Amino acid sequence: MSGSASEKESRLDSIVFDIETTGLSPNQGHRIIELGAVRLSAGQVVDEFHSLIDAGVAIDPRAQAVHGISRAMLRGQPQPEQVIPGFRSFIGTVRLVAHNAPFDTRFLRAEFAQFGHGLPNCIECTLKLSRRILVLPNYRLDTVYRHLGGKVDGAMQRHRALDDAKMAAFVWLKLQENELD
Image 1 (cartoon, rainbow, N blue to C red):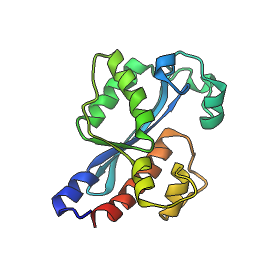
Image 2: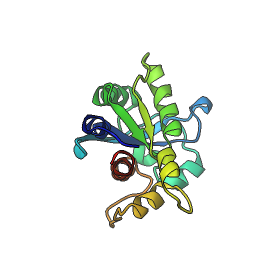
Image 3: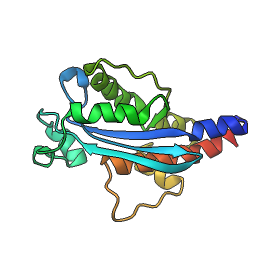
């Protein structure tokens, strides 16, 4: 695919986000307990959003085993009504990008709906895009990130929303080089 400079610039002006949740389905009462996002402008990170969220619900032990977030860590953290409106303002109508976007956007739509809002943003998925462009043994975020030259340092926390959003942003930018150049 070949893209114009303005198309490429538009695709590089995005918000890449990640969530951590209490389980696998908002339809089963699971909620977002961590939101992380980076705003990209002309391919550079220009702003960040991050918050733990005390949604007041139990965390499925399988989910906790993945992200390591416990109920104790959430005590005293802001509740959804203190975080979701701010995140909605942060993203505006800008293109959203996530790794496994259907999962993340399903939860985001459910949270937004609780406050009477929709999610009109264009959504892109780095998982789907990486499967189309790359041949890898698996398409987990860390696998794609490393394949594209991303460096994991000791300070990075996998399966934590902000660090995963930063990794997904790196992947998004690298995949855009392949798609639009």
